Image (tube, rainbow, N blue to C red):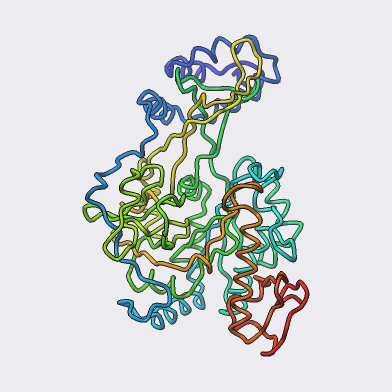
Length: 474
């Protein structure tokens, strides 16, 4: 049968385009070269037409508001367990013991969300390959995978790791893992899977956009794409085959992330939560992190852009922000909960964002707009929270576990300079607890593959570090 591989549009795709009201693409097809027809046909073959109808309905509605947003005047910050706080309802020591036992039993797995590129940082490649170590210049991948190596050293068991890539980062990520011997992890304990792409739509007409003559304008489907991609790729079954009962997830842009902290895992397990999440204490209403709230007995994350300014600035009598539990995208899930959620197509709603998306116009010319002209779609994994039977919220100190790399040099926050300072300050604090002094202005870094906390530091008390050093590296 003639098909796109031969430069002929398959009848089923032509019918789907017609039914979806995509006349512009149908009209353009005959003007394309054979090679462009083949690549565009391949893109069209991957389109989920039922999903496209849902996307067009959202486009027609013309709003970026989060689907199903509740009346936030009734919302409040739920009770949080605070890492290391003695008066928690569950004693920290008991939580540490339970989390440590789970790691030693090998029942905890991890998902690293690594689909993003480094373009916002001026880096051509996956963000995970960005060199961020303040002394070592270690990449984000090396620093984060090193944490799993250190967990194996301490607890005697591998932490099976799934890495979510995107179409833009998959090949380079796999090449990096092969070249770097999986950063010290066992290759058979790593499962690489790719999130899906979703097409961008013209914000006015709802038409599919082409990035080039023979390619649709596509973008990854957000960190929420993790759920469907993991299930479709066999990742959930793979975790089960590894003996994993609970899974933590974390983002590639946060080298201070501590998803395997035994106390955090212990709270997740002892509360029998489907979904646990780490938060930091928001000090100012303008901080660009979502807020974990309880509204009518349902936990959810409210994006900072969805929180009205007056509510964002509201404070309680003790001076704390009313919505002070800032989400940092470090979560823990019961594997059974993920399996239940993956069985339902509508578990995670689509979110839309107006963006400036380059496109090919009807004359075949590529236009690079200066203002938003299109809608991109994505899903957020935290939207699983309302589906959970029990949610556990754990507050951590941002200085210990949150230093995201998001912006190029010169931005007000989350730049490489900010991350370097956070990593050096963190190392200095741990060294000080061991009685080790670092000279003023000297950069120090911890080898994440060997040092989890101060107990792993072997330098004798009284040592003074006077030149840049990676502590723990042989």
